[in-house]
Image (tube, rainbow, N blue to C red; front, side, top):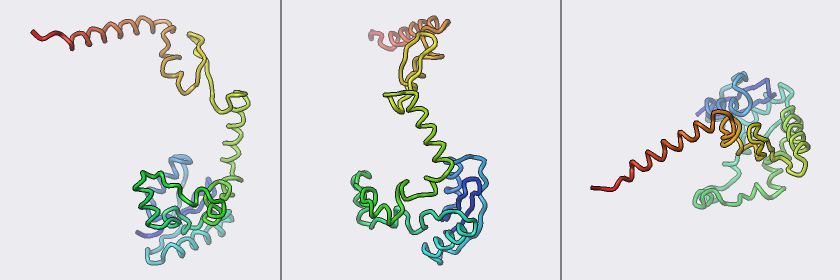
Length: 198
């Protein structure tokens, strides 16, 4: 597979990949479906990871963007085959050395602390502001958001409340009748399935 150097101006990113379609899908899923992904250069596979990463950085410098991880600093090139195999045997539970050791994290560019492109980006500022606003409004609950059902007045975690409250609340006018009918129908069905054999 050839190396593709691509550019996304909306997020000030230059990237390198061997699977352009997959990477485009991931970028659109992560950032926005409407981003424009421009192919800058296609390099033959024979140039190798180091040269492809160097070309990616040249384009990054050309646009004046901060450099991100070099193409050679991928998770699959940091670990040995034995470590990858052991991680697979353990179902991915292997404590990978580059995840915990600060020196290895810095060397290989893992973690937010080593990715200045995120820390200084607008996305990081928006994420931090949104999280701080939620945490401030919830006081001791921090990031756990709570909401109150307008029909029965019950208060609970927002992530769970939608299942049994709001439009599905028994106290909502009309819902109690529907719930009773559903319950009656389910009772009939369950009784019909367990008729004694003759």
